[in-house]
Image (cartoon, rainbow, N blue to C red; front, top):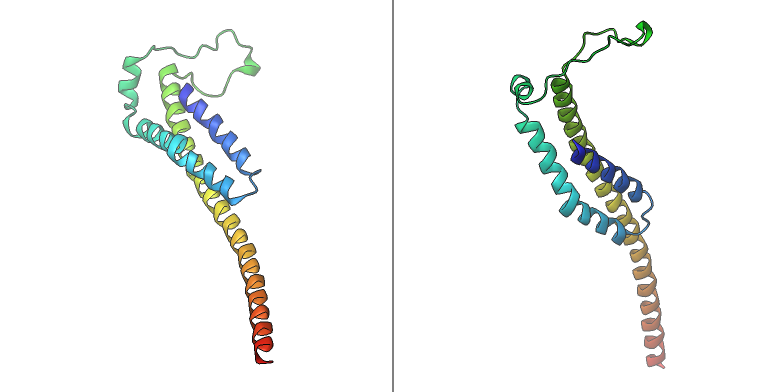
Length: 151
């Protein structure tokens, strides 16, 4: 469970950092680092937890059986539900966190890819303007040279 929390925190930090990247190379570098490092780890860990977490009845047999105790709580703080088993709640939260982490990872990957493509398109537009300017300059030099050679 702690590993899932760590990955969630790292994912949030990467998402926050991705908003401040202003150059295509920085965005591509972050995307590459994420894909090769944490992205692969998150996919593997969260996928394994979702696939291989034992069913509730097996999970409960292997873990401490502790029922929520609300006996000493004032009535206004007691929930409107039956007390739950600690093992059941732990299993449900672990699977839920793994599922959310997997979804968040996919969302961040899509965001970084779209952001990287957008920055690359902007860089290509700037490059096209430069190429057009240089082409016009070369054409002007060629025309001037042609006119000079005719005289």
